[in-house]
Image (cartoon, rainbow, N blue to C red; front, side, top):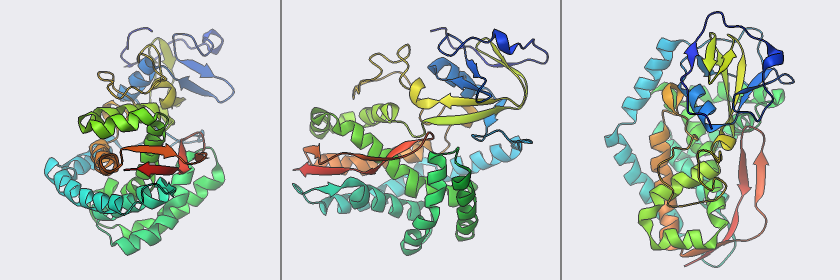
Length: 350
């Protein structure tokens, strides 16, 4: 793989579609059918994340795409970082650990249970209420309203889902009138719906090897590193979208203003040129940064919050139960944006 190159601006580079290489070569490739660039190598996706002139965009081409206000984006991200201070994360972690431990102690050993509905969803919903400052009973009602937003993120090419998501957002917003913008309705959706899906995907990957669960049970010090590996192996989201707001050069290819990109996060996270034994789960893997939370100026500003919650919710499960077996086929749902475990039936062993 060619080394990561910096994405730079260009005002008038020659651009010939017929000269663009087919997908699978060492450079980003243009898909004429979808009229979009497709990036699936780790180096190319990292370069796209770090380029300030490639901004988040939609799955479909828009006649006049709305451009983000850089000043507004910087302000919103700064407010969110301030709200997610180390002191505040410690407070939330203490409360979340209490909720998680109480919930784990109620789980039966040796009887089939669905980890999604019995554990991940209720604990994450309580955490979403905690962070956004709403009542838990209200959160339970809002969970159903928010479902279309998550469904649209999972299948961003479905226009009907997109419309339902827009309506759901309109219904949710009046419930969240204070606090940083990213910790209001969008924060509720992220913590109440996206977080449990991220967690159960990670647990499903862990359950592929009974020995891996037992290893983390015996050696809790491995959990932080192991969880990062699971997030690399089964990332949420699978793909992200970018739009060029001016001409750029990206690892040898000229991207014109207004052109769109698909960043294939899952494939980049399994790039064999970046990760040794890329398709295997290695709980002790260190060094290489996965792209599940992005990198650079548009990385997930709540990544620290998500990591803290994932550790706090997963640790009690592994501490109490020494082993776990999948009890039946895993039920998957979602679409090209991301797939997730709709149900994850297991047998837990103390």
